[in-house]
Image 1 (tube, rainbow, N blue to C red):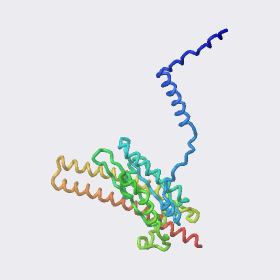
Image 2: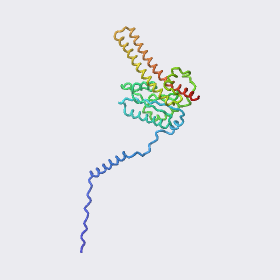
Image 3: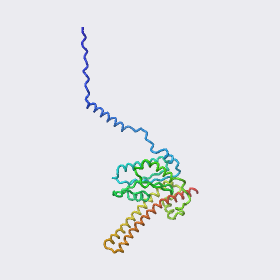
Image 4: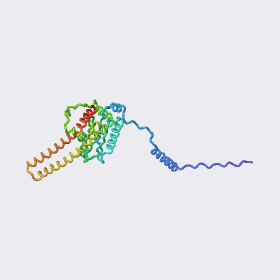
Length: 293
């Protein structure tokens, strides 16, 4: 008796290409969502080199850095990204300095900050584009000071090393306690202003003193700027009247007065900047003398 023939399975159906593509697309979306939502456990690269960390580890006193990131909102996106990386580098220097490097970032392009940037030695650029830009910094430690007038992206690979060397230079050597040649005898006004701003010198750190003096510096700049605008407007009105119908002598006098006002206001801003540095140096002398008692 012949056995019944075994039923044969139907030939496998061929999967449609679009079905496979859709399956893999959905799988890819799921994996992508998992990748971005999962905690990032990958180690991040150390932003500072061993040489820079060595410089920071040898600091014995504070180094103050004021970073002026004053770019208009329509600035080149590549330049804005570079400015952000500079800020991140400065934050890394502060984080790895055990409290020795103190960074202040000024990124509000207000007129007072622009004036402060100029006073601190930071150069304006893009003057021909209608929106003046500043991108630079200044370092101070005691009476030592070093500006970086204009930070440029093409020099970014060398920036960390440049900053480390500058920190080393401004922090080199102890801050002298005895009055130096620049402040052989501090004026009574300087001492009075320090006592007004910091009643207890011995209980205030150099870091806090620098912040207090810089806040006063900004207030003095704001007052000077208001005075400058008032005096310049008056001088310009005088010049306008002379140009409209005055004599040659009146025109000459108005032009001389305008020049005199501009020079006087520039000198006043320079004196305000000098007073900032002098206050900090004299404060350190006063603090050393108070702690020695």
